[in-house]
Length: 338
Image (tube, rainbow, N blue to C red; front, side, top):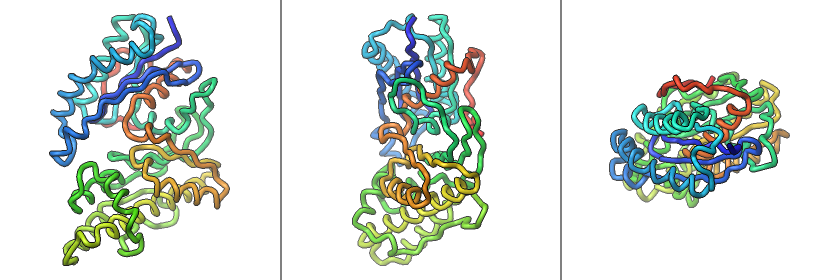
């Protein structure tokens, strides 16, 4: 038996697998089969389509992973898969497949929280050993979640704030649709915003109250829609609209994360999730953290969107700490992190 663990991620529309060395935390192989092109014509993820393609893509993807790692299935130390949160039909595919591998090889199985994978992803550095998770403020910002988490150590997580309606990534996609941009909207808005004026439109920053760490983006989306209705030629102002919308989202995310970190005396802020790849957001965080003497860490670009490397990392910690080796576990589409 080796120290290698194989993990699967299938919580939404990305079919992914990764192999990690449990002792060092080094990722030996990581593959993602994207379904973006399949869902783009529908303007969003279609659960039935996602589930069907997970079933088609997973077997050859796992075969490639095993080949790249150079280890036979029976020699893996354990197997893992995303347990939740996510789309039930998508979760079931990867979860059942991984559990089947564990059962057939008599190896441990680890059901992993997708959000914990995001939370830990900034600490994947391929060093000599799994790093300790230091106290910090984690901002997880994606298409489905916007969370501020106080982290005191591995599995010591405390929810400080969350979105009360749309997640930030969801707001990006919906505003992108309003502006006539292709799905997913986030990268398209960021691209258009580069040539725009972030002060051209005064969009709202909701819940801007001291001591409140929750978010709300539905009003911002509505404000964009009303602004579009008033413009005689909206496309002429596309860059400014994108830049102003992006600035509103980024500003409130940075503002609340800083306030939460300072209130809890946390020396570090980490940024993860799909929206974390937004360079404007990262630049704002770097500048703000530097001016407040805080350490800033962001997930690597290839680990911001859904991937199995982050699931493998979370599983490595669970394996090292002898947690969750429970074959009777089922999926939980509404699984909470804290």
